[in-house]
Length: 217
Image 1 (cartoon, one colour):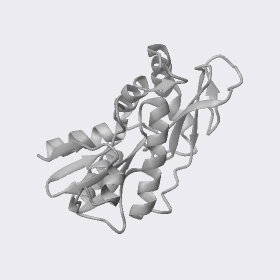
Image 2: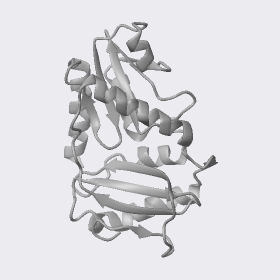
Image 3: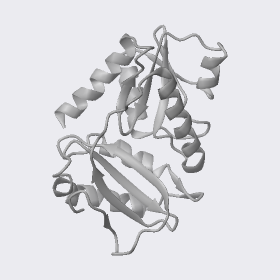
């Protein structure tokens, strides 16, 4: 992996991207690497499951090349790109914080990610709300959790909080079918983003936990 450039498996020219994973780096490391790789294995490319061979290639590439490849952007974003033929490449780019962290903006991003999940089997960004001491989130019907989502779910359980799935959560929020106290986005790229107009203690706690993980990388 060259500095910020693409490195591929066999020197091919990458075709049309069918899957793009964007994973946050910290100090030239991928903090939740194993979770991201498990979520990668749960994904699909053109209705075909991602192969264990592709996951093994990604793991090897991260272990051998990430330290040098992330020199320009040590706290950037690692992008894994898979084309329509299942061939893959990696590149590192800069991290850019979200410009719109309002609840409306986060709902929009989560809806777009759910559209991706219908094709690939994993939503890279998910909407979460807090109802008293319970967290409710929408992974997408029949979809596996992303790396960041599995981390937040485990963190919530560790803190003694119940976690529940709710399909079409954004619709339930809009029509008043669910009463919530706060909302946040969980993203493989952005971590835990608390809604600026629907903030609360649970979301802040999850955000601090994620940030501590980055700081320890």
